[in-house]
Length: 480
Image (cartoon, rainbow, N blue to C red; front, side):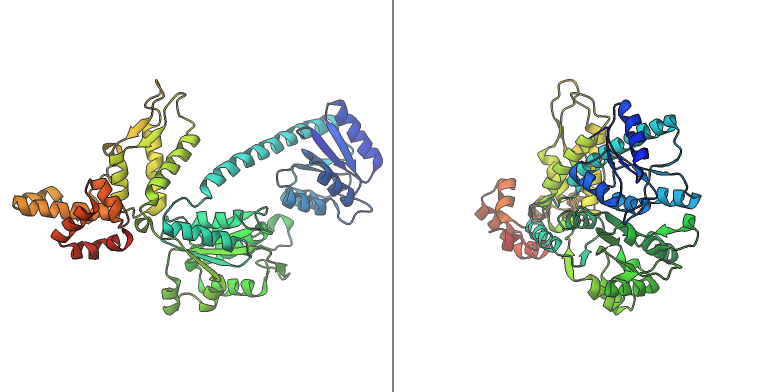
């Protein structure tokens, strides 16, 4: 396929000329005379390059029309347009719709050969980049974790993806709303279409309108397709949807209601063939009560609600996520010395990670694991043995005492108490931190601290277990 070229021209002499020149250079050529034969040829066997005439007789689509379909259905396929009587506007339009270059007839053989060689190289790089992106996309598009919350959410995503319904994804900053959106697209019937994301908080209202709907203009150079048009046949995520201005909320309601829209400065109604997803870290119901968000827009977006809990509420996922991010970071580390061993998290380091509060949620955990890969990824290049990360090797802000130990220096607090009272304070806070670390599971907590389950229950009772239960929340209920 690397040297397969499809020549599309309604003139047999031109087809034969190009085929002869290119086959003399070692290329494999096929020919087509109109849109039907061109698409049939590509369906039968993919090509690495298409040479496409602008004006085609006996063809339902002209060259630009064929180019539009090729750009949509074969985005990595380079297309070189050809014409003997075209205008600058047509050339610009062709480049705008994805043509790699434009050749004028009569041809200069050297120019043809140089353009073909460069176009094939661009196509090869596009396919290579797409393969690398798909590998990275696959690594980041899965919802990792084994907690009941994530298992249930993963099942909900799989069910929701099969439909074309609109979905509202909620959750705190850094919990993984974009991961959910990409997963929904990947599992949907629209998976072969584009996936686009627009951050509504990053643009002012006028810029946002232009980015979403595009701009119409008599001057072809000033026309600008919007995100809805770019995402045609695929999925469009409207991130931070709560930041939409009232005017943009009204316009979006009409698009969702009618399934049609028009570009800025335009009058032609265009079909919105796209699945809308929305995400927010804010409470939209509170914003509705405050008259800051339209209720009708909320219900149109919230057909299927999906909520991602913060990492603090699913601590058992920390180990799974940490190991995943280390693996991904090591695979992407281009500076890693040959022979360097893998990074593993020591038991004390994992205890610190599971006891930390993670205000930045999964995104913060990912950043910490990437930091570890950068700092310690090549330390044992000589023998290839694993680098075991200890608690002391974690970033300073992560090594702080677990949040249940309070904000004061625990040593100073204990030094002001008699031995017995200090020991009780430490035991109480230590057990509370461990109970929360294991999501309230008494059996797992007892196993880690080295106590029998019944002995731990007695200890909790002696240390005012009711107070611990009130603070820890789930231990007696989740830990049978």
